[in-house]
Length: 311
Image (cartoon, rainbow, N blue to C red):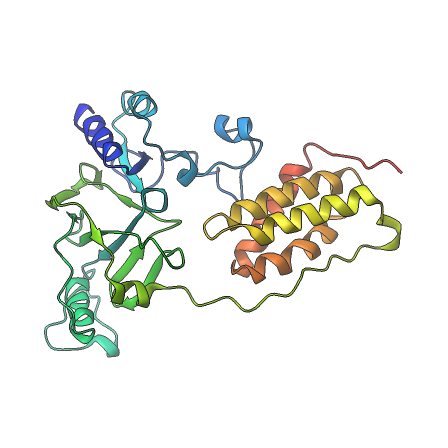
């Protein structure tokens, strides 16, 4: 436990935001039920905030909070990539019997590290491996880079770059060196400061541009055209539409809670809330399944504190 505490404090000193993982596991050390879709408000942090508070928001560089957490149990260490300004390339090794897809059946390609080398060669660039590097529990590699200071916020990818090559950025985390998962240790292989993410990699990871959006129009049934109600809806829609990348799911949940309170008070229906928020969330790039789950979770949370609108 002291070694893990020391390691967690060391990461915080580097400006990397950490949070506890279940001991010897990759999962955050919070109740499994406490997700954006299933938050029941019983977790103390969520109850105090009046909304779901996930691992990314809980991640910290505060040494006092870190000492309190890692002095109680031998938690593993998760590093939240977005708040830490990191992009991590996860170069994995194949599982037994796993073979590359046709596009990567090339001479010398046996794992994610080989694929990464081919990507660099195709870009006419050296392999960018003079950076902070961790060997994972399964023998893979995590290459740490500094997130670009300009351009779009980068998100997680799975296989976009190639076979057995994933990335973690905003909305993602990695298991830090010093931790174990299933008895397998994560170890520092190269202890350098993370180098800037190479431009050629940033270009490959840049998200596709969102379609152009026109102004959002909110139509209410005639019986619900009260000025207060209309203003409340437009305020939540505007908040969601303006949410930056990495904050959109949270903004959607907050909006669904607020309007869910009005629905519970009889001023709206759940269908009204869904109809208002869904197209805005989709236009901001959130996946349809995630949108439906988050709105449903927000409606359930809002229903616990109904708000009525006076006639």
